[in-house]
Image: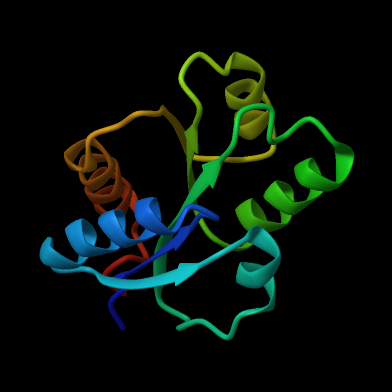
Length: 127
């Protein structure tokens, strides 16, 4: 089974749609969710390459937010999109197990590059 699905989690519809289109055009299957809670409750394909999680500025300050990220990272590799210059969010995300943190605004090609790098490094990606 090939891990080819990328899940985009963002409460910003425009960002979800733009990333979904770009990632889909690159040959990945794409699923979207509006929130981490929705992702954790969703019935998703078993073969998920990674999750792209959009986090608002200061979005990982409260304990329940950190717990949600930790739950996401325990089940799938997570790339976090953080507000530009939001160092506390980036540090907290990495502490909770995020694979990478990318500052926004970000070009879709950078997100695709990170997804491809993650998939290439995963020995189970083509299992």
